[in-house]
Image 1 (cartoon, rainbow, N blue to C red):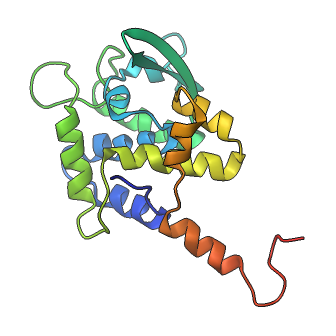
Image 2: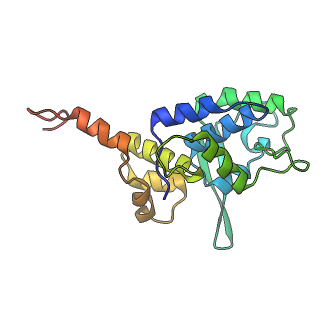
Image 3: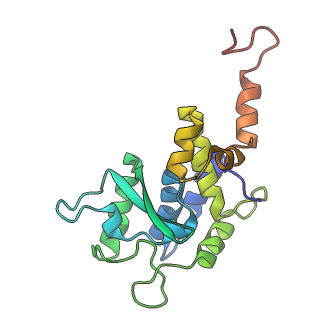
Length: 195
């Protein structure tokens, strides 16, 4: 079962990206961590989903196509300002063509990498880290961070595209970082944040 990543693991995985596909792989992780799509949704993104055709600027939000039981729908997720620079860098490196998939495969013309390839990338970047890291860890990390800030289970469920909050609750199971933060806030006297 996949788990959420700690902040240090997130940084380490981004820093480990290298070689010909460094920018692509970094953005795969960054976009996954900051928008929370399912891996199939992430891989289906084209630059036209992220960059405004008229202005040439990164959009303020991305519409993510969801396929649920033969019914297509969209959910809108804001794009964090931290993502603007990496999106622009990759867009320029790939030739500034809005019709291209963001996460290009080296096999074939204008094809995204496969889910299997994305899984291999995440696995190779997480070598030496505690088990349970997969492509789904990016989504779980987003869910955990979003909920930690918003404290709103319904809004967290909506941004993830879940049909009910019960599914979201499964995503928010404790991870080691959360446990450490809570323990660090505890004292033998009065609890920090307690009445």
